Each structure stands twice: as C-alpha cells, then as structure tokens.
Length: 235
Image 1: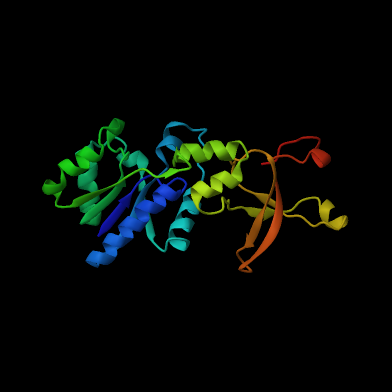
Image 2 (image 1 turned 180 degrees about the vertical axis):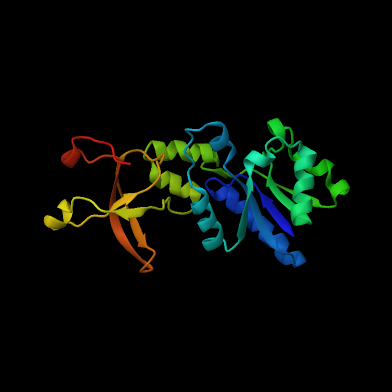
C-alpha cells in the first residue's frame, strides 16, 4: 500500500502534488493508495475557536470526488501523545504500507518531534520506503493553508482559488426564511453552514443541489442582511 499522509485541510496544489506522486507510485508497483489525515485537525483540537478551511465531510468529498481516492481520518486525540516511532509503528500495523509519501515540512509525534529525518531513520526497522515531496511555489509564494486562509479572510477568493486549484466551497442546508425575495420576484435560499473564515460580502459562484444533481449560477451573500435585519449577523 501507498500512504499519502498530511493534514489536508485545504487540498491546495501542494497537497495535489502529493496525491499525484502517490498515485504514480501506486500505478508503478500495482499497490492500493490511500490518504491518511486527522480529525479533528491539530489546530482544531488545541484552539477551540479555530475554523478550518474545510470540514471533515468536505475534505472527504474532495478526496473521493475530485481525486477518486480513499481517505482515512485518525482520531487526533487518541494519537497526539504518541512518540514519532510509536506513531509510525501504529500506521504500519494498521495499514501495512510499502511506501509513505509526505511533504518535506511534515511533522508528527508528540510535540512534533518527528520530521522527514525520522521517516527515513525507521525505514529498515519497519520495512517501508519514504518519499519526500518538495514544497510547492506559486507566484513566488509558498503554497500553504495559512496563506489561503489569509486570502479568504480578506475576500480575495479568486487568488485563493488559484492556490486551491478548485473553487472554494461549503456544504450547507437550505432553511426557511421570510420569503421576502420570492414576493418581490427574486427568490433566495437561506443556507445554514458552519462559521466560515470568508470575509463578509457578496460573491458570484454556483449552487449545487444534491437531490437534483444540478448546478446553477448564483450570487451569494455571506454575513449580514443589513436591509432586512439592520445589520444582524447570520449564522
């Protein structure tokens, strides 16, 4: 088996590079391939107000629908105190992998004690090969989830989309409103979603209706309805 490991919070173009290399090794050696990530994400666990770019459900959707690859989520609370070698041993026992693919800045084990040096160090003991993937640079900037978070929080969604190499999205359920838009000839859909890091504003995009398997061009307002609610913030 080929394991591709990382946080994969945003599935940006650097993550996609990991997946491409993992799939290439999988094809060459005729081995199954799988992404291994964490839930909750480390930042979610340690910082309760942290809002990830994508939820666990959304990350699973990207893996399976965009990249056609399975993804497993390790319970971070259960593994966070494992030493680097203990963590690798757990992975080996759980997946019996032949190759492990990780970014050059990947850190693991309690207090991030493990780096790619440890991945190489334990190759012979645990019988696997580690593949280091260099960081991705776009427009002279390191591609990182933190950079994308900054773009989204500033409302620079077009730049964020280039770093993601897909359109930023969120899942949500339509909830009943006051039907004011429908009455004046502009029907709207109020969509409840978890708090986003996106700057409040009006955005062009698409809405996908799962039950109908259809997409429509849309204008989305995220944040407030000042005309109707006097500035009251929506959930």
